[in-house]
Amino acid sequence: MAKRIEITAGDVTAYAVLNDTNLAQTIWEALPIEASASTWGDEIYFEIPVQAGNEAPQETVELGDLGYWPPGSAMCIFFGPTPMSQGDEIRPASPVTVWGKLEGDPTVFKAVLAGAKVVVQRAE
Image (tube, rainbow, N blue to C red; front, side, top):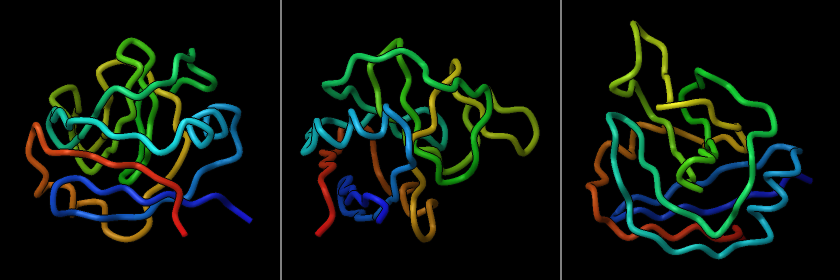
């Protein structure tokens, strides 16, 4: 059975399913995580207590992907274009490893402001 997490950022709560990567397992083991959100276009990111390289680096991601950005030891939630995007693509600042996918509508994260409290935990 796939591992699920609950992400609460400000007034937004969403769920995600983890993929079957070593990185996803490492992040699962680090939960729960509490942080302060930073925003970059239609992306929220925040530092997490995980130090890892890129397992399968991607220069572009899909709507709703969860990524890990090694330069900032950061978890990224992608819900639309970033300042680096060209056309309809979603492009991180530099390659990330995708380790999970949001369930439902990822654009709910547009309501989250920089500085909002973020809690990531295992879903019941």
